[in-house]
Amino acid sequence: MNSYIENLNWRYATKKFDASKKVSQKDLENLLEATSLSASSYGLQPYEILVVEDAVLRSKLQPAAWGQSQITEASHLIVLANQSTFGEELVDNYLDNVSETRGIPSNDLEGYSDFMKSKLMPLSESAKATWTARQTYIALGNLLSAAADLKIDTCPMEGFDSAQFNEMLGLSKKGLNAAVLVAIGYRSEEDKTQHYKKVRKTKENLITYI
Image (cartoon, rainbow, N blue to C red; front, side, top):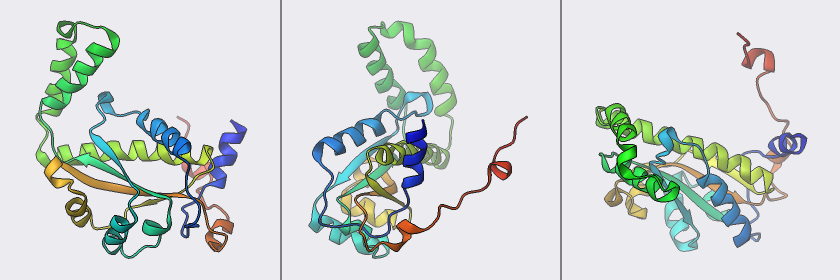
């Protein structure tokens, strides 16, 4: 646990990446596996993870992200895209996976299916989009922590035009929406922010025991 806390103290929102350094395929796969193991409500994972490696595409995306250099300088750009909406197939597909993975007859899962559908299907379209977007942030937290453990630098980014990203990445036609970005790679020695002291609330102001 001490090393985990040390790694979290080591990480920061990297402002300038060393464009000459690339995350290895093995580390990338470990990072993506850790992200895929993130918790999600009901286990439904109503999102997809896009790994943008293509330099030309990232150059086209950069203006839609306020021109931020991390988009093109980082080793990879990860897009967490939530489902814009969903129907009963979200639950059905998940329970088909449960049935196959755990060897449970589908009939035995009908009660759980009915329960999930009773909670999720009545939601308004805007509430569905908000709920799925929140799930991506659970994955985001896991991604950032796993990256720190692998000594991979990251910069989570909300400063971008999601509509433009959706269009350029073909997300809308897949029923997806770019919720949050993560640039990953290795910090540049020129990034002065790596030397800033980490600022957080004191435990007394943050934590309440009841």
